[in-house]
View 1: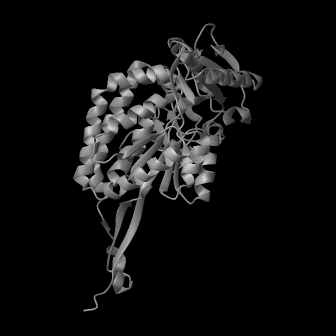
View 2: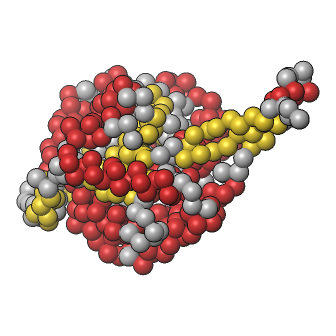
View 3: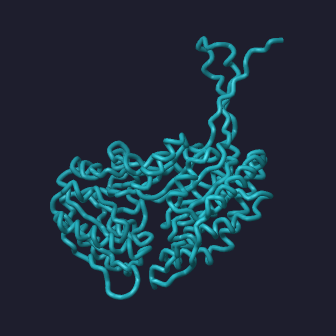
Length: 455
């Protein structure tokens, strides 16, 4: 058994039971039967399922936002925006799915003395089967739908293990999907870690997607690797933003504060480290402090995360960080933490090994552009990042070539988009979600060759 708890009040919301092994195996059998039918559904029928789901998201957006607010403290307006983004993603993949799944003829290169038997070949995109998704609590609906929408369109069936903190959101996802088609194609599971590992090893599971911590990703990758299961991992981040000497500091600080504070700072792609050219360092710190001061105290998803964040702040202080704003747990009930600004006059490698999952911004001074990129890339993470400059074209070339990350921005902060591939490098994981590149992750990319006629 486990409980969901309101992080703002400490009150128990609901108690859940973990599935027994017998119950879990029965659901896998149901999913297997559903897959055999779902994979044969025509593409227009699959697209219609996604469109219906989009409508349901919009019809229930206030209810779903309130549930996120209750279970993990997400601001209501941010919750509504998350649900709208889910609806848009469903519409996008319903619209583009048939085009992505069209067979690709591969006849062009055969003027190069290739065997004639390969003259009529093509690549097709087939579903893999049952995909097991292990999802986090910070974007309970969006993190799921950005994998699920393309996977549904491909013809896969999905098993969902949501984070315990947002078990109600996991149950609601299954509820929203009931009746979209004749058979159930999304199944919500309440599992502990050992049961999840056992499920990954089940031969009927053909792929695993995990969003969460780097340590959790390593365990999933190890288990899935031993079972030879395809995986996509979207893991932690310590996104760096470089502030060039020619940047508009007032605008940069405003955007950077927003980038740090989105979802109360609890986002893998939230801006976490700000590396500022020495010529504008003092001005940026002044502006950043003013911007962060305007934000209210954040509610974190649990008291455990609140304690962990405070420990990390204390570590930053020991590494030479000076706290200019916040930095202490407020008194009273609830997992609250204030907007916090910590500045460093000199670098330390240990700074960049931490992912601070909360409203804490780290600012470091760089003597040159070269040093700024060296500091930015010194982290083991490589999810997102950005640069602020008065010369956007030059900055785009710089950040594209030199920043070690999967998604970079110029004069803005990283935001995932259904049309664009999203994912990281290094300890931030591998594989992609969204866009055409993410669409194909859980496809069987099948080569089909028509041989010569024997007539």
